[in-house]
Length: 206
Ligand SMILES: Nc1ncnc2c1ncn2[C@@H]1O[C@H](COP(=O)(O)OP(=O)(O)OP(=O)(O)O)[C@@H](O)[C@H]1O
Ligand SMILES: [Mg+2]
Image (cartoon, rainbow, N blue to C red; front, top):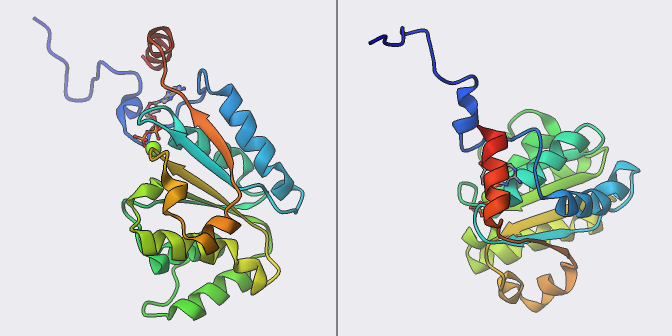
């Protein structure tokens, strides 16, 4: 029996097994991609984008769809993808936003108000922030963070769009009246794939 040598592999591209792997084509998600693009398109022209809320059960392509669109609009606008499982305080969220805008880290120990102002003053293009797995934030952090993003335009004249992603269909009921009244989001639904769709997706992947 022949064994593989250490430098040989059965796989053409082992990266496709990575959890973060982003396929070149997202089958059966044309409608959701179009919705995302048309909501974000105003930002490319320098105007205020429409906020989005991506809703769907796990593994329905929500994260992939947003990353897919971010790849295409990056450069025209500033994009900032944040997973709230790992980044779960308002300060951490704005630290990530700072890194996306400035391409370097803010001083450690910087106060929130200085960090916030520094972000807004450095922005020369519209900014799109994606908060993925929003449901991992506790109620106070969820409300404070979303509010700080949506109210930024009152501090400096900036255009910021927010994309929330969650499996929790009741997420809006966790927003207090102040934040809820500001977060007018276009809901984008990601239905479960049926058997044929899963089959086609896996065939393409393999
Ligand atoms: N339409 C698609 N075409 C190709 N691959 C897909 C498609 N939808 C999902 N996938 C793949 O399925 C896996 C799960 O997708 P993704 O992480 O985007 O789902 P999700 O809705 O964000 O799930 P969760 O809610 O658990 O975070 C990824 O490996 C992704 O590449
Ligand atoms: Mg996801």
